[in-house]
Each structure stands twice: as C-alpha cells, then as structure tokens.
Length: 56
View 1: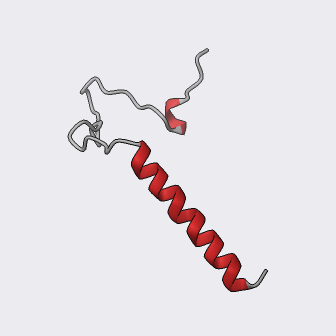
View 2: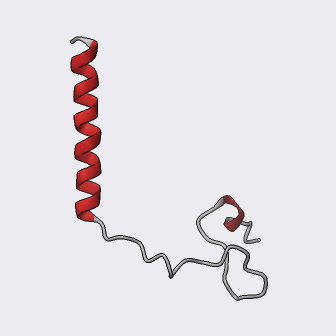
C-alpha cells in the first residue's frame, strides 16, 4: 500500500465513522447542562476522577 492509499482509506473510515455518529445520535440539549460552579446548588459531580471518591 502506498501512503496516498493508506491516507485515503483512513480519511474515508473517519468520514464514515463521523457520518454514522451524526446519524445515530441526537444533538445535545445545550440548555440542560450542569452548572459550571455548583456551590450549594444541589448538583453533584459525575463522570470525572473527582466524582469517584472513596466510599469508606
């Protein structure tokens, strides 16, 4: 395989993956996001290393 064929194959794969992702998912609701600073708002941290505190 030449470099151009490899680059074209990878570009086609990435474009196909992007097209599949856009077709299969729904756009996020930008107004339903957690607050940036949740001081006393009742919002809890989730999905990050700071959210996985020890439970004991």
